[in-house]
Amino acid sequence: MEHLQTQGISLPRLGLGTFRMQGDICRAAVESALGLGYRHVDTAEMYGNEDAVGAAIATSGIPRKELHITTKVWHENLAPDAIRRAFDGSLNRLRLDHVDLYLVHWPSRNMNLPAIFETLLKLKQEGRTRAIGVANFNLALLKAAVEQIKAPIACNQVEYHVLLDQTKVAKYLAAKSIPLVAYAPLAQGRAASDETLISIGRKHGASAAQVALKWLLDQDSVAAIPKTSRAESQRANLDALKLKLDDEDRKAIAALPEDKRLVNPGFALGWD
Image (spheres, one colour):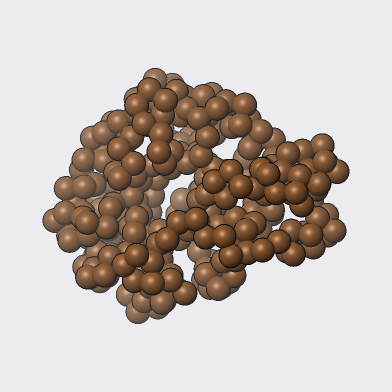
């Protein structure tokens, strides 16, 4: 598995997303993924599944140092004391003494960015999270965090797939050597039924979803966290890493419409 190096951590480029998976289904999905060789699991306090993720990790037998675990603080808990309470709760549910990456999950209209990052940095200095980062930050917010506050951002996690143009954010992150972690990398299932991707996949003996995933992972400094509870799909996502797209494939993908935003992170602040 290829890794991205960022702010002192090694981030596996393919991980398991767990949004909307809970209870026994989530636990079984994480156990399956870990058994197949995944070492990057993404969760959040808002998902309501950290306990299930923690249970799967605890029974996996995999040494902690081999795992990368990301969780996130919800936008309602961005005051310094609230961040600490949320973080403590996340660690307890995950049954861990530290996480590898702790993210601001969503921007909030009234958030105090300097205070937020001061608190996150203290958690990092205490060894409770190995790195900090953000999710759903637009260009203006990224610039504020990186250039004004000088926060050591390890990633920005955003919706990104073949049907959504993220050029502005991706170019900025690349220029700052900050990875982009793509959620909904298969466009919430829409990639699987796209005729262009199906055609490309047929040429390579692959699925449309594998084509869409490999297109992302062929980009420098991009990781992806597709969500699936099915072992067959988890294995197929791993197999996508073996796919080799050519210039003709990339040209066809570039011609796809790129305006299919499925998640609106700008409910508080607007999106560039």
